[in-house]
Length: 255
Ligand code: 13P
Image 1 (cartoon, helix red, strand yellow):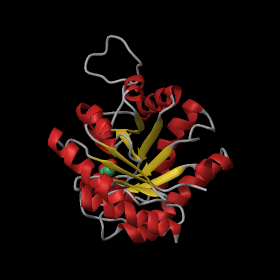
Image 2: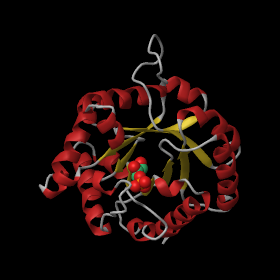
Image 3: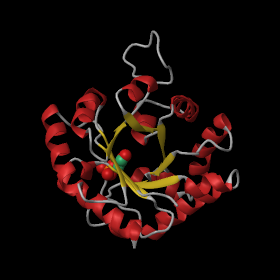
Image 4: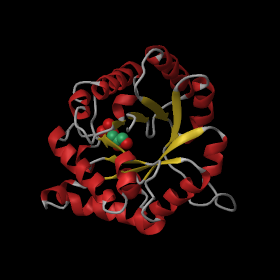
C-alpha cells in the first residue's frame, strides 16, 4: 500500500522567524493527524534551523536541490551527504523552475537522482509538460521522456523508494488547476509506464500532483486512485493552510 505524502516547497521564501513560527503552528495543528507523511522543504540556508524546530515531530525535512558531487572544489554547492548529515529526507530535483532558469538537462537531473540514491535519500523527481506541449497533445511524450532519463541512467528499479511529482508547468503558481480526472489520467500513464519496466516498483512509487494546490481543490484531487499526495508551493507558506491540505489528504486517502 502506498502511504500518502504531502510536501511543502517553500521555493525562495522564508526567514528565521518564519521557520520557527510556521513549524510551531504546524506541529500543533498536526499533532494528532495520522495517515499521511508530511515534509517541508525550506531554502537551504534554513534547513538546519528547520530540523532543530522539527525534532521530535512526525514532520520530515526536505530540500529543494542538491549537487551531483559529494565533495570537492564546487563553490556554492550543497552535497547529498551534507543534506543527509543535517537530517533531510526528501530532495526535490528536476523542478521546472530549475529546468527553465538554470537550464538543468534530463541527464544532469538523472545524475542528481543517482547521487541521492547512492547516499540513501529520497528523490522527489518533478516532471510535467508546458502549456504549449499540452496544447500539442504531448503530455505523455514529455513525461515519458523525463522518466526515461532516470530509467536509462539507473535501470528498471530506479524508482524504488522514490517519489515522482507530476507538476504541469502551466499549473504552477498560476491558479490554473488541472481537472482531477485529467491529472489522474496522467498519473495512471506514469504508473503504467514504470510498470512496463517493473510492476512491483510501479505499484509502490508515490506519485504526487503539484501546481496551484490549495485548501479548496486538494480533496477532490486526492480522491483519484493514482494521486498519492501533493507537492504544494504557495499554499505551504501559511501553516494553517498547509495543515488543512495535510488533513484533507489523510481523510481522502483513508476514505
Ligand atoms: P504552487 O503550488 O505555488 O503552484 O507551486 C507548485 C510547485 O511548483 C511545487 O513544487
